[in-house]
Length: 178
Image 1: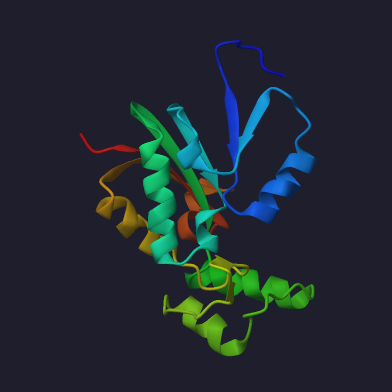
Image 2 (image 1 turned 90 degrees about the vertical axis):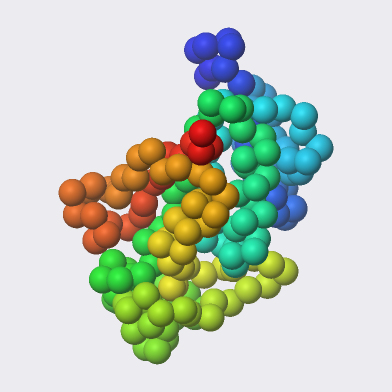
């Protein structure tokens, strides 16, 4: 798999039972897996955090961001992706979810309207983990980036970037403020 022998890939999952699922799923011996960043002494040039932060409330998002920052090389980059679950995109997603009978625990008319207008949605949480997406506000995450002195050097909406906030997710490339 690894064409460049100088590149090392490490997978990190902070939630214990999900880490165990990851271990079962990833059979590639060239990928190191860790469950506790504090135990790792390594620093990384690029850290990807894809579709993770929306599953934590703000205090735990901050904790995860600080953990990531603590493992980043000085000139390193962080790539973060999260779903867009507010605004018109949220309304469209929830209409589709309802129509295909894949509603989340918190999906109801009130929360759909709250998410449409960027209002706070109380999301179902268990053991500090939020299992639903409805109402996750990526704009609040951008405030945390600033608070943690991370600069957004690139922001890309996906899958069709020119549609902006009508997309399903947003990717950030971040670096430490200089």
